Length: 171
Image 1 (tube, rainbow, N blue to C red):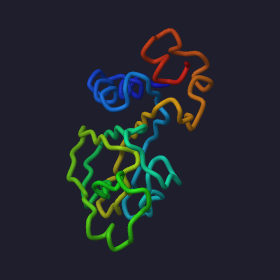
Image 2: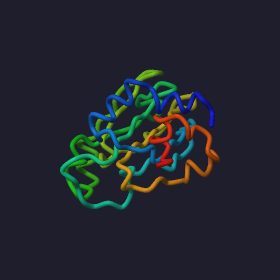
Image 3: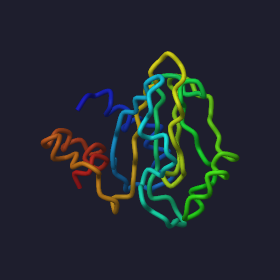
């Protein structure tokens, strides 16, 4: 409900990028905050896709993550690891393949990561003395149902705004 979170999904550059990948008709499937505390196990340290349990691939993306780094994302803070090109293969590779081919970008506060939601990724282990924060926006084709009923949650709020009406799933 907070305008800061709405700004993350209505930023003109973000809309332009998401539209160029998904087309003009897309929704916000979910928006979640990621909190990775120091020296504590994080529930997303296992390799996963953000559209879970899907062991197939598509010729065109139908889901895109736009992830905002609110604090530094690096090896020490447990920044996200990615397996390049894994969105092109239906099944997860071996543990050894993940270990040998994963990348962990060094990202700063304010950086944005945009990736195909079929790309395997995971949280790293935070060995720093700071909590790592991020906000993940998952935009999808409207053929994928929202994880929560955003229009119902907002009780009609933003229904008259043509951009938010579409993105928040009122249509």
